[in-house]
Length: 177
Image (cartoon, rainbow, N blue to C red; front, top):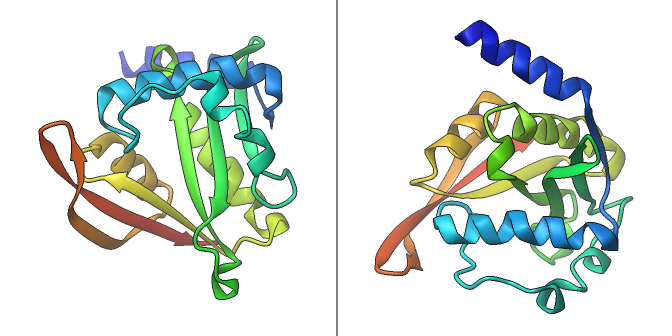
C-alpha cells in the first residue's frame, strides 16, 4: 500500500506546475479556501468568502517579494501558497508569513510539501531570511508537515482563537532560510 501511495505521489508530481496566480484563478482559489473555512482547521476566517470579498487579494501580493502561487495539476488548481509581510515594521522586512492550502481532493499527494519546498528554495531571491507559519494547535497534519521541512516551534498563543464554541491555541512555527 505504501508503494502504491509513493507511485501515485510521483505520478502527480510529474504533472505539477507552480506559477503566479492570476485573476482567472480566483474562483478555484476561493473554492479551496472556503472548504478550509468549513473544517475549522486551517484558518481563523469563520464565514465563507466571495469573489467580491477577495477581488483585491492578488493585488496585495507581488511576484518579486510576496508571491501568490498556485499549483496546477493538468491545468486544474490543486493548491496555493502565499507569502505576506510578517509585521509592517522595517526590522521584520526579511520575515514573511506563509499560508498554504490544498484542495481536499488532492491531499496526501505531497502538494503542500512541494509548495513549501518551493518557497524555501526561492526565499533568498525574494529577500526572505525567515518564514513563519501560524497554525492551530489541533491541526496536527500541518504541524507535522512543517516540522518535517525544518520548521521549529517558535511560540504559542494559548486560547486565542474562538472557532464557534471551541477555543483554540495558535502555534507559531518558523524556519530560517
